[in-house]
Length: 134
Image 1 (cartoon, rainbow, N blue to C red):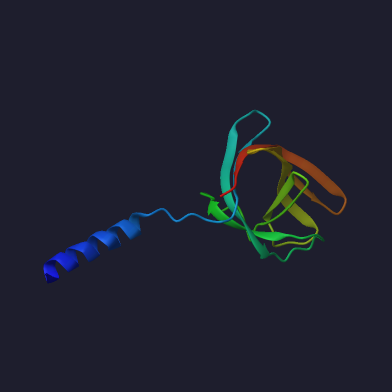
Image 2: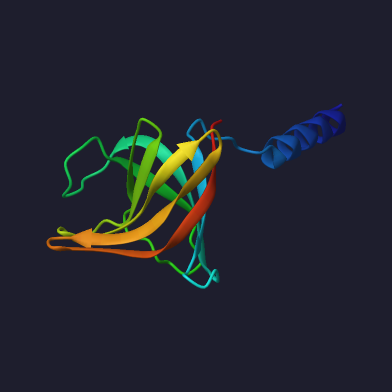
């Protein structure tokens, strides 16, 4: 009897461990390309509802990093309103921002990698991606 219970418990434990954990937050995956069309980086974030500290006014939230192979991002944050999404990739300096900014249409993101701050603004690349809700 104990063997049967132990076997059943092991099976239940194994199936629970293999179950995929699903988030209740949206995710967004980005692919950035340079002016020649060469892929620069791929990033993926979970867009949480936790407030983020930024130097920019607005209702910024924390973007949890899911994929960033080269460790480019630093304390990312995002803001989304009226189909427009901006993700601050490096949120550690005030008045010098590095972000992906663009529009979400359905489950598609299209935008640019931009650097901006006091008296400067520069487009660094094109960004496309996929937006998904849980």
